[in-house]
Length: 253
Image (tube, rainbow, N blue to C red; front, top):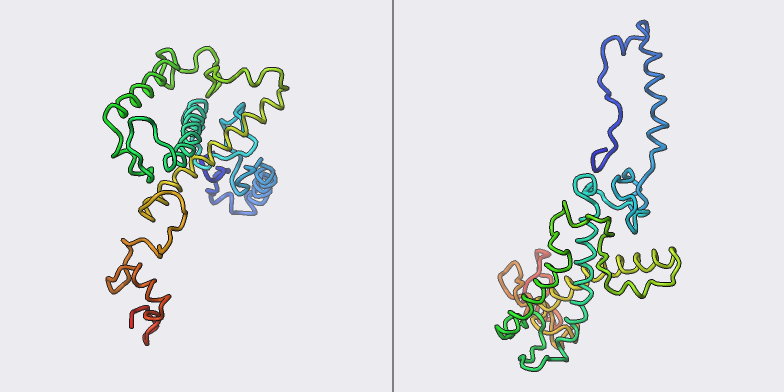
């Protein structure tokens, strides 16, 4: 079926279908018998108002049935899971690095509490080393097979680079599955978390901690309908110099 709704039988009718005397009643009964079959269609666990998506069979977490846009019916689901796992792993490391940036500095680098500004304070040599290392790991992990068409030759499981697989030795299939599911869920959480951290620093224009800087009221870039910075407006609201005026709109005294 198409991503959102199951495609049932065509509801177009001929004149004969509508006529009881021409057997239309019997045909209507036959059509109505298909309704229970559609009602019994397996539903997505995470989105019960949608049918269970196809193409997720064999993947960790498939029991949730979350693919509302039916990506797995268009692309190789293994390739999609590979990308999800890699992004999740990168973001798990990134969240740790984002926090550590405020307190730790590598030798030869400039201390920068706001992790968003670290990209501007890093030396060119540091950037070159980072890009080289990332490119080297990416190109050698697949043995030269980098496309969706050939990266899974040999029946390699998505995300399996034999790195840390020793920790799974001696575990039952259920324990291995649980570990893989935990990695998947933690990676998804980390992808949302790093986005929240980055935007936090943009909003407060400072480091991650404290989460609400002392004396901070609101983003300085926001303004009221009168064109005043919302920061001064909020400060005035607290001090009693701004609030609702006669026409039930906000303003300053």
